[in-house]
Length: 347
Ligand code: KG4
Ligand code: ZN
Image (cartoon, rainbow, N blue to C red; front, side, top):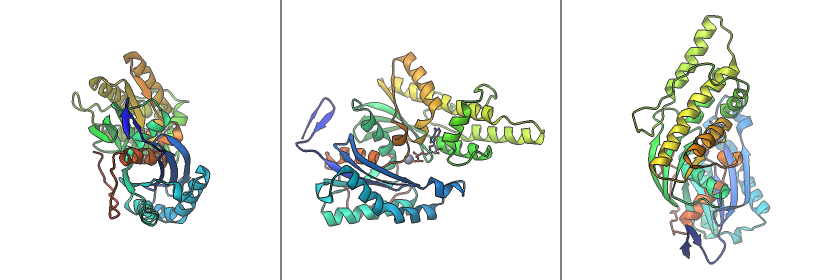
């Protein structure tokens, strides 16, 4: 194995079966050499959780259990590959819902043990970052990456493959969580991010002045509880005064205040680290206004903005297969007794 111009060169193709069950998607994928998707099967439970207005952990575990074997079979069939052709099993072991994580982790352990293959435990947040290696074949570290999803909002400096420095993170809600809560308050449904994104296109982003929390000078942390309370207060006081609520304007103004802060901090971090790329990851990276604003701000500073296609932004196993590959080639495998860690940190 050799490393040239940021690429690892192995003497043979490495095929990894990856499994992801940290929240409400049961997913299995076969990824070749960390960058090429041979299959990426995603069974989304969203329709099941929709009627409860959010993910119900017990229901999520049960649904993962019902579908995991079938999803794995489909992923191998679509990749035209058998168990004997695999080099390793990669699996998310945190952060996430503990019961949900355990279904994927136990399945991966059973496969690794019976097939005699190395097991690689992958951090879910690292997986989101690595979705960009699949999408952008030219992307190599170092770069800065904003991971914004339903569970996390992190600004990370990717110093090298598998080497991360956390520059900032949320002090309260994750960005996606704020989208989901405001969507619920507007009666839009679950998950809220895509619905707010959609109706915001019909509204005015400057209609209502919601706060933007930049925190202390130079801080790369986030806080979304202020803007969330401001929107809820606006909705309550409008209701009490009998004032008509323009949902499109509320959605557009709320979204603008979130994406303004996210994009300013990502660009500032890229400048500080002298990074040619500012990279987006996680469910909120699918937000069309965030992509638009960042592309504008990046152009002005000569920074290339990269993000994955929407299906690779939200939870999927291919991103776990990519992250797993970069551990595999460094010989970083996991023991069969690793446990699920619901609040696993990225390091
Ligand atoms: O990464 P992900 O699938 O799951 C977690 O790891 O949390 O992210 C899901 C989150 C949800 O909160 C969802 O509302 C948000 O990503 N999201 C969006 C958009 N699409 C998904 N938020 C804003 N705009 C979108 N277009
Ligand atoms: Zn995620």
